[in-house]
Length: 134
Figure 1 (cartoon, rainbow, N blue to C red):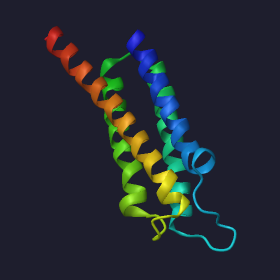
Figure 2 (cartoon, rainbow, N blue to C red; figure 1 turned 180 degrees about the vertical axis):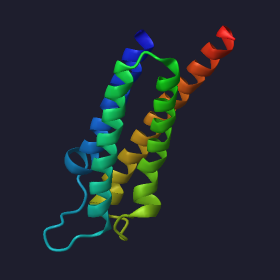
Figure 3 (cartoon, helix red, strand yellow; figure 1 turned 30 degrees about the vertical axis):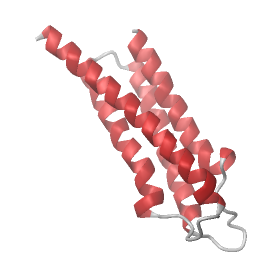
């Protein structure tokens, strides 16, 4: 019970922070004059953060360990996607001193690591509990 609640809350908070990082906490470059790559990365991260949060809510309501294991694996994939959008898929601005490179990218890296570590710890927890029951 405790594991389900703690992990669900961590997933939901991670999702909210992924949404807030490129929009409020460390906003990307302004798109008033021209939409640059960081604008599209921001939009993608908002969608990804929403998915992470929804999966966290779903995680809370399922008691079946197999479903929760699958959701943790999905969150691990989401952690990889958090990094792939700014680094390889949509990209960021070219200049190293732009707001998206100085603030947003480090924040997304930290959030990706936190979500990935949480998911990996949870996957290991389920793997150990499966060995004990077998």
